[in-house]
Length: 337
Image 1: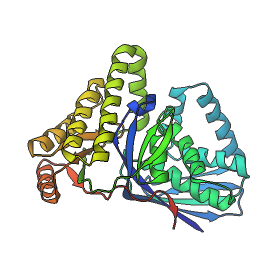
Image 2: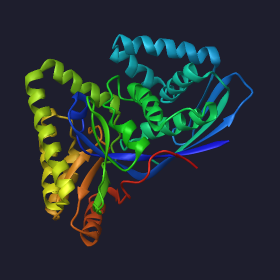
Image 3: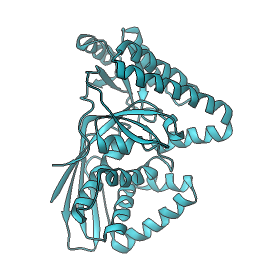
Image 4: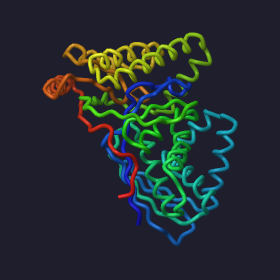
C-alpha cells in the first residue's frame, strides 16, 4: 500500500486572469486530501471517493478507450464535450490522469481510495489528482520528479476546469508553500517568512470551476476589448501585490485584495453571498477581502490585522450565517506518508 497526501490551495491574486497568461499568486493550505493505493491482480482500476460517495471501476481496455475519447476532445478544443464528461462523473479526470501515467510507464492493476478534507473551490480537484499522480508514479517507477507530478495533475485539471486550466492549481498543491505563476514563464517559489492572518469564509454556495472558467472564456470571445482591459487591470494589481508581499505590508495587501474583487466583479461572476461577505469584512475593520478560486460561489479570503480582529470577524460572520475557519497557509506540497 502507498499513502499520499496533498494540500488544498488558495489563490491570493490572479483568479481567471492567470488563465490568459497574467500573473497569479497562490499558496497551499493545511486542508488535506489523503489517497491510498493498493496493488491489484485484476486488469482494472477501481477508484472509491469517500467524500463524493462515488465508486467506479474500469478495465484496462475501457481506461484507454476513455483516454482516446477525451484526448480527441482536448485536441479539438471541444469544451462543451469536456464539461459534459466531468459533469457525468467526477471520477473521470482521475482515470484520465492514470491513463496518461500508464501510457508512459505501463499498466498495472490498482485500487484507490480517496479521502479529502479540502473544501470545494480551494484546490479540491487538484489535490486529488496530485495525490493520485504521486502514488501511481511511486508504484510504477523511481524515475520521476515533482514536475512530472504537477504535469500529470494538470491533465486532470484540463477536464475539471472545462478545458482551459491556468496551471496555478496543480503547481500550488504539488510544490506547496507560496508560488507565483505565469503560463509563459512557469512556476517560481516565493519566500514568504511572515504570518498572514487570513480568515477563509464559506459562502455555502457550490460552484463548478469548469462552468465559471467557460463563462469568462465565452465573455472574452464576445467582448474581447472589455474583458482584456479587465484582465490587464487584474494583472497590474497582482504585480503590485507581489511587491507588497515581499515588503511585508499587510495594509497595502488588504487594499489590493479589495481592488482585485472590485475589478473582477465587472465580469459578473460574483454572487450576493460573496458580496455580503466582503461587505461584512470591510464594515468590521478587515484590511481587505476578496473571493478566491473560480468565484460564482465558494469561499472568500478576509485579511485581518491580528488574531483578536480575526476572532471578532469570525463572530460577525457567524451571526450572519456564514461559517469561517483559519487555515495554516504555505504548508508543504504533495508527499508520501
